[in-house]
Length: 209
Image 1 (spheres, helix red, strand yellow):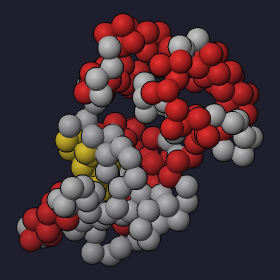
Image 2 (tube, one colour):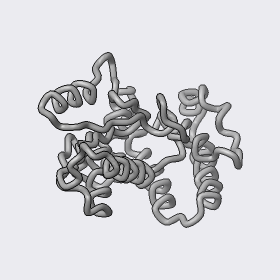
Image 3 (cartoon, rainbow, N blue to C red):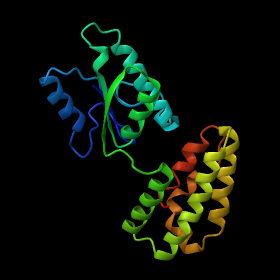
């Protein structure tokens, strides 16, 4: 079994608030005689790379590399190689299976049942409500997010879309009143656009949405 972690930077244990679900699963499976491959996400723990610049498709290639590695291990039955995907891993596992005939089966744990865009709208609404955002503001946020998501879906070059995203963000901020700007004041140092890491800069100012 290859374990595929959920969204966000995760180590091989998928450790969160003191719990290590992948460690527990790996222990149980190995006790049943099932070999387990788990790994740190890009740029986490013992893995190299930049997690912030990686997409689900990139993570799928990491899993494919794991499958290739297992094929070189004599103790592995390559006809019975399966994937367990948790949360975003539940999205990545089918992507990998669609590209690799070496995947015998997949197990999806809390994987997405909606399009990613719809999930983001729902998550944004829940986060906003928990943060005490007013109903009026919550109505405006999806409109702003829709502009962002539409542009991202249509872009061809990262350099081009980064500048356009920044422009949309600036226009949005200019439309806010002083009280609304004060709520996001702690992020103002990140508003300055840089060619080097435009996406990282933009993502870091979106939590208030």
